[in-house]
Length: 197
Image (cartoon, rainbow, N blue to C red; front, top):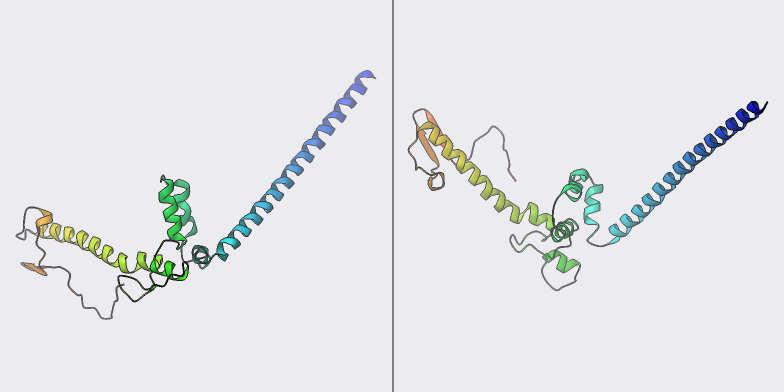
């Protein structure tokens, strides 16, 4: 009889512990759910305030319009090993908050022209500078350097007379060696027009 009472007591204690553990799990799940709701609410309010700012709404608008890859856009923040000053400059550029003519005209309300200082046609925004005026010249110079190296390598492989060093190689529009013609920076005629930007 004593053993039976003791066994029943142990079983009751085990049942109570199981009930307590299940209750704790339910509470933990509920707390996690509520915490997630609060975090999402805070994030949404922060995003609304961010988008409400005149220039800072540029990046979230571009993200919402699927103009850029969100994962890749923020990858450098998580895994990049950059200094705080550089990070703040990049974020300022993403937010269109760098002192361009457009920024000075629209945000700071200065009495100056908002057009690009280089091309004088488009608004001088970060997007324009990185994909327009500045970028075209930089991309073209880099492209030409790579192509000049390829040109030198092709001429060398074909045995066309040239200098010993790549960087002193003089680029002529047309090199001919037997039945091989090597062209430099020539228009290529096609069946239909192909435009390059």
